[in-house]
Length: 106
Image (tube, rainbow, N blue to C red; front, side):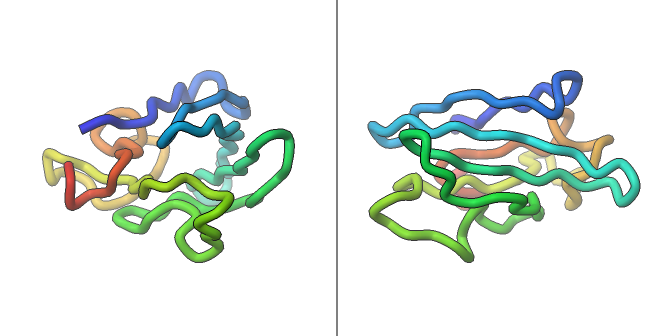
């Protein structure tokens, strides 16, 4: 299963990802006071979503999803090992990854 790699040492930062034949720009932020991550999503320079919290097992952008603009695949924070069920500094990129296609496909 593919996943989107997040480099915590670069946060906040922007990067492009090709998903289902479309290129999206992600911007990742970290809230150190409450230990959580958020993501912004752009396509063709248009901001689609801002400040969306990464929640374990919940598809990213699922509550604001528009099939004509957003990725045609689910992106789900998930831990294949079953060790973690939180998306926090200690787990993201260690055991929890942003799986493309969803946790059920992982």
